Length: 186
Length: 171
Image (cartoon, rainbow over all chains, first blue to last red; front, side, top):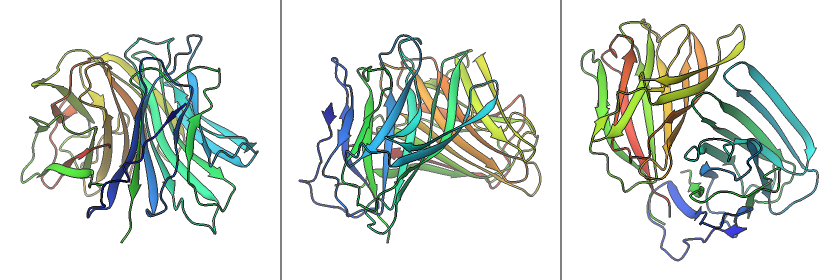
């Protein structure tokens, strides 16, 4: 697991979109990427991802847990296209949010998936937490693009995000990057 | 924490224009986001984005996978080894040519790295015709420092279309 290092030692500057932490996976790979001690001073969070798995048997799945909750408190819906048809997927009472398929070692070496994940009103203690995302990859003959939503059934403020759930005990490849941003409202 | 979402350049078309380019893009950001609004075209063809280093790549090094819904159903298609560019707009009905306008949000992650091929993910909305999402690939490990929006096989963006390029810096 790689932990995000918070850039909290720097004074806040004017602006409404700020970089909180970034993790870039090194040559050894990483089974998961985690951001901890996320401050509650923003309105929303955004995670921007470029990632690849070392699974060689097929594509992988990236998934997300909040506050290390491993209970069946998650749900998600996905609308995706694979170049042939549009399809949907759903998970309920799940132990994590399945984000989307991830490019992996069954594809050409330089192909990575891109994701933009929005985590809305993450510090609110009166609501369950909702995320939305856009993500996918193209591999010049195969690929997948998806739009999804996810739910964490908890009113706790989100203080950590763990991207793991690589379904096949695989690792994120070198050069995978997860960047966490905070968005402020007026 | 510094502000990290910065406008790099904006172009609002004063006349019909075949291509809109951003060049000499600094490599100092992590991601690029292009926001294109008031999109209207002289011909109802498809919007693409070519990218490159110093000059745009006109070779058959692009591909994409898209999903779209048009009010009747949802479908997914792809193209491989195309020279048109990274798909931005509608491949079925085509771009709006009248008084309806489309919007595009176009993301390129880690655009200046020299290790990976470049993946773009985008959302295109044309309220009168289609909503669409796309993953597109440029098969090059070169850093991107020029991008060009175009309509293929022919056509121009109409006057009033706005193109803004943002850079996002990570910690």
